[in-house]
Image (cartoon, rainbow, N blue to C red; front, side):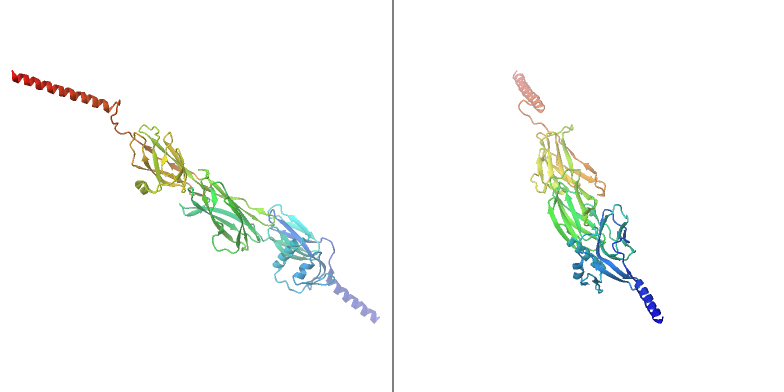
Length: 460
């Protein structure tokens, strides 16, 4: 009887001990992984690294067996796996984030099958996975790497801490000595652009795609404007723009990238030249909304007329950047073109411009500012004016919009005729000279007659 009681007591103790070591339910999706604050358009992928065999709630101990395809990973991490695939964990993991990142990389490099995936449709929509008890790593195309362990009925909720990167762009305007979304310039001018990248959180690689439209040509390679952590690698470049990748950067930082372009003779007057940029990030190659700046070039006209406001052809002019140069007729600006239509070009060879058949000429490809016009030769039969005339191009909205407007003051230059000199068959002054000549002859004849008459009187 006593032996029976002892045996019963031992069995009770054993039952109590065994009740604390709970075998995990096999192949049943009784646990959950939830991701809150998920980012729209991103894909979340989970990988099962190990199966949960048993666990002790009070002791917080767990027994795992390696899932298919993962034994080499645990071994590479210094975690022993026995001959029956049980994991002999020895507390060597000190950085769980790095461990999760290494696990995700291993899965991708070795084509380990994913346990489940989900793509987020709306911003902040919850993502929920029903899973078997075990140990998992989680990856997202935005950059999330996490590792979680789950018991039979456990629910683990992870907060998406990553944030979406962003990009802005600005261009330098020399008249304000500041950056804005627009500027104006002359053909041949060097224009400076700044791209600002907000790195977000958890995004490893950021690709910039920059495109220059007709009228702008890449002049200098992009580079960090100030000292920034990370590397800027130029992937591709041409006259029309570049692609570059930022890696090794800090999270939640703004990185400024600067480069220059030159305004070319292809620039279209008044409509503005687009310069666009966008950012590509994450494994899904998510593309941010495109940002842009506009660079404008302008034109002005000069009219050549007579005193009756009729157009005069045959006049020639030069244009100068300063009034002093115009007065001295030195350092005339250079152009390309002919027959009343000219484009400013620092590499041009034309300095003396001729009006068209209607007495007008157009100058394009210029920046806002003042330009000084000086006549070189007047049309035949007209007096040349020595006056210096001013053409003014003024942008009136401070470069804070990509639809700049401009006020243009174009000069009208008047030539007057001088005295008409006598010539064969000419009228006007010639007629007066003829009449005067007749009067002189008549007076001469009269004088002779009077002298003869006086002489006759004296003789008698």
